[in-house]
Amino acid sequence: MKTPKHWQKMNLTAALLFLPSCLYALATWARIKLHKPQRVNVPVICIGNLTAGGSGKTPTAASVAQIFKQNGKNPFFVSRGYGGSLTNVLVDINIYSPQEVGDEPLLLAHKAPVVINPDRFEAAKLACENGADIIIMDDGFQNPTLYKDKSLLVIDGGVGLGNMLPIPAGPMREFFNQGIKRADAVVILGEDKHNIKEKLVNLPIFYGEVVPIKPEDTRSQAIAFAGIGRPEKFYQSLKDCGVNIVKTFDFPDHHFYTRNELNELVKEALALDADLFTTAKDIVKIPADLKSKFKVLNIEVKWQDEEALKQFLLK
Image (cartoon, rainbow, N blue to C red; front, side, top):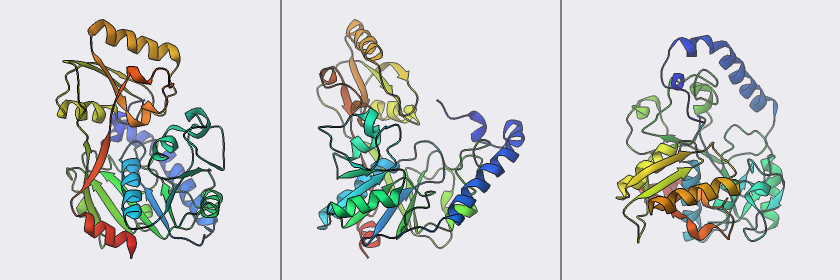
């Protein structure tokens, strides 16, 4: 599902949806206020955002985990496990499917252990029982069950905060002034095209860029598909790597692919003698016997000042 156009600026549609947006924001505020978050005996770092859709939380969480690991820590991710059927399990990439634990937890499990549970406090307890000395919440800024020692808000500098209205009138999960008070720092990924910095007062800002790892041994043309919040970012990254995209196919965020869909994509690629590219988040949802027919574009976060981020995380 593409981002609604009225999320980008104030218009008649956004104005008509303002009252439902206020009710949505009120429900979020009440849920946070009425719950007392519970603590675990290790630090909890939340990587969250204020908007719906892809802002770069997951690659940021993966990068933060790598920083902790490089400094002798044993981080565990805790995640809601969106789209999965199981709960309160330690993810094993050799056992569980994306239908059972969700796509993002399977992706993150290649970086560090992951526990899934909508109740993040219960997830954190299980992580601690398995040896975690740092908990990283992938998303969950608006989740009130687990006490957060530090919260980093991730904002896509190219997209910004849209019209700054809550869902459904805009992209915000809560009003900006309501959410920013609970943040300890902000991560801006990419060029700050919307002067986000001007809206942030007395908060550390860490600048980074999500960069693709250039694929090797590519054909002269490619087909690309994705089931993520902003597939156009993925397509642009491929183009930036010199990949000649001749066709694209958009699927809903967190989409579980059927064999028929995957076989149709393979047929398209064979007919055009083209590579078939997808994202790291999508490749985990492709059956093992078909994976060799697909290529993946891996990404990583490059920090403007990684040392400053490291000092913030470790102090």
